[in-house]
Image (cartoon, rainbow, N blue to C red):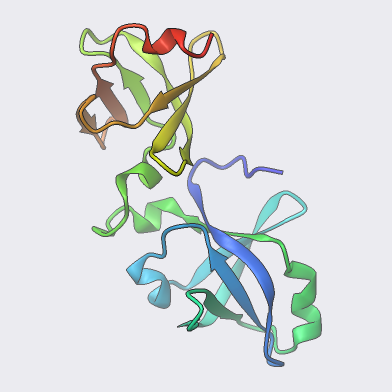
Length: 176
């Protein structure tokens, strides 16, 4: 069940318990912010709702996964119930992270053409093997898929949460 709060982004999924002290192994989605080691908390999605957990330690595993240990969770039995749960980060805390890829902070942005005509609102970004795709909701609440092609992006206004894109003719008709 997806998280409804647009300010949360997916860090990864808990794949197993690590050791006997209550740590878990997290498989990152695609991006691990440099500031994760100093963050105080993350959300674990349980029963479709994000629940905050305070971090006591973060270490990188040789496998490329992340080992997370949370305050007040000292044994592996307690943490087994979180296997398979998604771990989320508060996007607002990461927006100043210069390393954060732009496609992760675009959720919720409004997309317009160069003539200021509304195209849609970014619902999410799909990471496909060849490119990223913007999943937009247009004014009729229809889902539109638009390739996130840097050549089509004219400008991004972070304060106004808008993107101006010069889309090729007919690209919006592909989804029909």
